[in-house]
Length: 396
Image 1 (cartoon, rainbow, N blue to C red):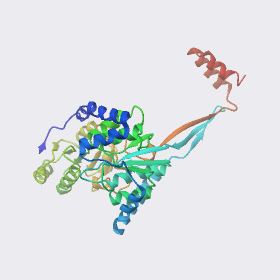
Image 2 (cartoon, rainbow, N blue to C red; image 1 turned 90 degrees about the vertical axis):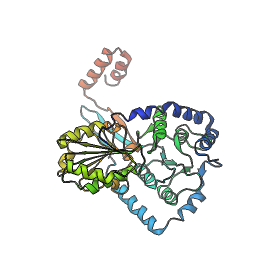
Image 3 (spheres, helix red, strand yellow; image 1 turned 45 degrees about the horizontal axis):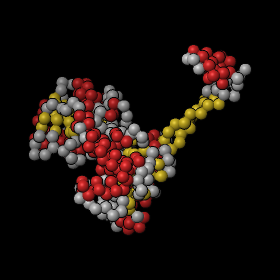
Image 4 (cartoon, helix red, strand yellow; image 1 turned 120 degrees about the vertical axis):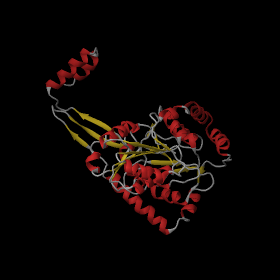
């Protein structure tokens, strides 16, 4: 269905499930494996016998992957690895006033990756989350997915490449809770990353009070800004492609061309998804709407995409000109785990920086008297006399 009024607040739907998800999270926190088994039977009609995939099961499934698909994984692996390696920060240091200071970067020790499942499987998501974690030096990487019988062969092969510590056959909010708090069978982690449906994202939001999360990722969002230079067939195909993620996807075209809009509407008329199509007078007006939406994916199919990109304030990932947004989902290099629900106003997609933390260091062997005196004065001003004394007795 074609609509002209874009929804203003996607978080409303998100908040409506918080009470339900809080109950699920609390059940897992209190009852561990039993709650996971009971909840999986309730929601998916599956009687779980074992919450983990054994090493033998993973090896057996990985052996089923064809050589052709192994090579495809290897190519994407190297492309993503190259992107994330460029972002690894160096240790930095410096100083003045007789002070040596700097930053050392340390990896998060344990990370849990959630990979959605159900009717479709997403081995690409395991790559997108696992590669930057591995490059960052995360000691133990765990992952969970709602594949209750056998693990997908491509995922099994990726598990081997990444050196996954343990893979779990758990889905939904209960998987997030299990990795956040730990159970008899599931290892507690320090941070959870990965996309998922509204229940998964609500669970991540709830457990973020005690463990780290990457952000709110899902459902999918795509905004295309197009002028009369854009190809209607490509615009429509890009919208349809993101629509494959489900009816909850936000699919928006903002265009300065009435001719383009008419042709795109014809191409979308038989699809079951909702499409929001808005005509504007200028690309600047389109950018204003897009920045307010702060979409996960932003496609700039305009005459001057590079100069237009400089005006963008909020977006998870931008594709320029003829570049298909779907390429970001697979092999361009940047990650496809991206902020949704307006979170791109304050964060971006996953990088190695999500798996490392800066620890500052300071060494005051021979600080200037001016710096010491200033520090003591402010400590005393705040009423912390002993703070000032602990500084002063070292440099009298």
